[in-house]
Length: 416
Image (cartoon, rainbow, N blue to C red; front, side):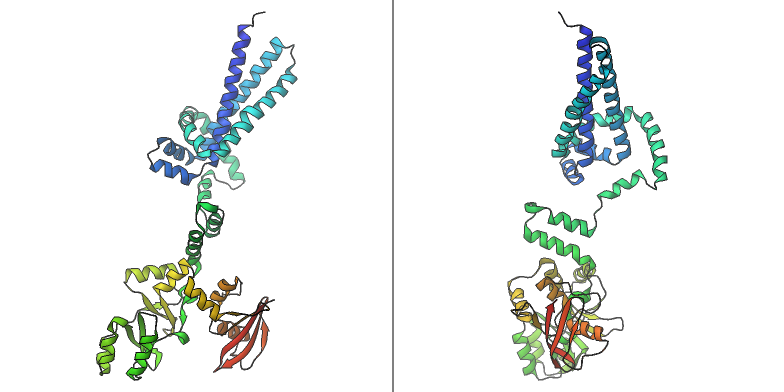
């Protein structure tokens, strides 16, 4: 028996509607899952389809409305055609037709296209953008009506469709997670460097400065032989010059000017060879200070508190080191500064920075207040320690072993 042409037309229309439904389902997943960074990169390469996709994603409510209107139209019309087919050619078994149609839609119009789109979302987004843009224009009146009602309902839940664009903005922790999850896409050393840059927005000058007690400088009132020894032994290119104490700073000596400085017997003439002292606030954000160093063509600054008292010293190299991490020689210095015992404890002195110890041991000693171990102990006791003692601060045991002029010269730290 020859097949009825009307049945062939109905089946052909049904297949077309199922393909159309699959297109809408895949487009929805592709558009919503597409990485906007990748689309922006494609658009920079003059790929029109990527620009079109980004333009559609700027108004997600309109885009989704167009996709859902098209998808529902295709599915409902397909259901109506199956009903006609079952009534006219298969004895009116509409329930069987509904079951078969549901299975076919799930496999061929939902699961398969959505899975394909999830695997290659940018490809689906760019390829479907042309048709979707036309549909957004065609369905504009209907989209306006549906969105108007939808917005009224969203207001009941204190939601706004425009807020969807803010989901693309990542905070520092989310960017760190993105770096950690990048795998081999970003080499490990670069991931660590980028993570350090992200962490710098929370750091201030005080966090990484060299405390005033550890500043290496030249006392202009000392003999030239003392200054010569310091200049010959230092690894720095610039040294602060002061009168008797660092609080009476007179200038900065660049080693290229050291010959003129040493050869000149006159104190006033010595001072003339010095560079002007550059001061920075201890509360300045590290990234801001880096910009200040570069804009003022400076590489070293004396750190002062709110009263103008000198608290330490910071160089542009210290900031770069914070970004790039610790390398060979610096690591060896840390190993000398923090001596590991067999029981896992650390022997060091009170001038050591808590931040360096935390990074070296992967510990989490609080850095909210004091920045050195001396400062932490003094802050905890609310007085300068007068004798050897043992205290516990948030899962860490601090055992003072030696004191020297009210400063801790030797301390044992153990994680409990």
